[in-house]
Amino acid sequence: MTYAATAQGALDYFACRYGRSRVLFRGPRRPLDGPYVGFLGGTDTYGRFIETPFPALCEAALDIPCVNFGVINAGLDLYLNDPGALHVAERASVTVLQIMGAQNMSNRYYSVHPRRNDRFLRASDRLQDLYPEVDFTEFHFNRHMLGRLHDLSPERFSEVTGELRLAWVARMKHLLTLLRGRVLLLWISDRLPPEKPVDTIEHEPLFIHRGMIETLRPRAAGYLEMPVSDKARQRGAPGMVYNDFEASAAAELLGPIAHEETAEALVPQLRDLLG
Image (cartoon, rainbow, N blue to C red; front, top):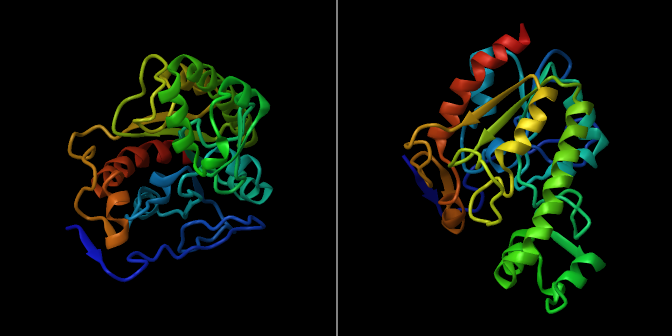
């Protein structure tokens, strides 16, 4: 059942580094001196507030180290700009790559922090010209900034999301090439991918639609959509570990049931890919 603790750090993530990467990943640290499965992605892959996230559940079933390279609020830039992380990821026998939103990466309209990709750094001249009425110095997070731009002008906002989608597809293709195609793409969300572009900031992963994913599938070894059950889609589900200050954040995330179902669906596909 869900339990909340008053002490800071209710759940120990055993943060660790791999190789020469400057990024802290979720532990416990796994061995890299033999075959292993790598898991790249954002908050769901990391398993925030989850005692046993789906990478760890896969390891228990596969009897091969499953290395969690997920990072809270990560975007594609985190991996593409970190040679150390790329080096250990490309050495994996197979990599599960969570489909992350398009908002947390630098583009022609704005720049993000190279490691904390959800942090907004600056607007380009192009974006300032598109929204001359906005003072961009008041924003610290991409989602807050994008929400304001959408509210001011959905029409102008569609120009921004169009750029984000183009940049996302290009960078995903590049990442899949670097990982040499040994990649199982994973969609994990509370909904299936929309058939057409949706320019709202209500559902993760932001701004991704099915056509974008289909463009990538020939470059990947497989694709999985999760979760599927209504029970798994419930937010703040029982079994999450958080303190009083983290309760609101925990309520927004998928719970342990989603991780269990995801692992159950991943394991047979991973077995096939591992041979």
